[in-house]
Length: 208
Image 1 (cartoon, rainbow, N blue to C red):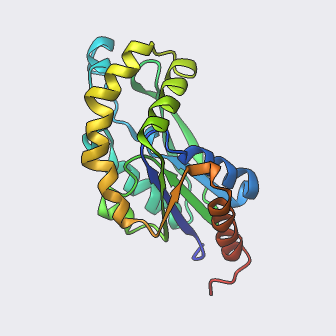
Image 2 (cartoon, rainbow, N blue to C red; image 1 turned 90 degrees about the vertical axis):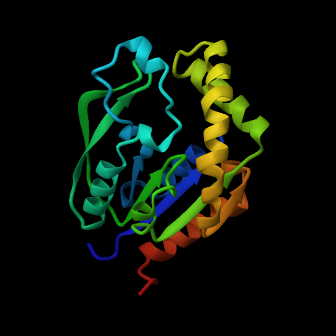
């Protein structure tokens, strides 16, 4: 499958990455495969639950990036992968995997998608989704409390101690690697339409 392209979608927590990814998946269905950087958090079976809750999950070292590079390269070669599964409620990777088949368009989404050069080198299109910090923290609070069962105090504490400083140190600087910066994330319909048109251009075979 030589005509596979990889689209990297990066940006801070709550910036709107997932909204854009979802809209692309809804539009292109089986022609688009999505993998999430978050599924590649390192397994921490050796630690207790309390110890796992105190880890810094916004630092690059929290991720098994070597495995992700291998899997993304495998998909780009047209082969399936067994993607790990991460469970936010237990702060650990599970023993399950998800079989992911390649398609003509592969989307990799995550806060640190552009941090590692070897990952960037596998990407054909790089999108950085941007949003104001106050909007991002409100979205994160809503997501973590409602969807992941976290307490409000724990979300705020995590944001102030790790999320915010790690964003400033490792996420925001990668904006310079983006081909396109999308303000307001999935709410920016003009930008979303441009990305959709670019993907359709590829699927129609107009790249060659």
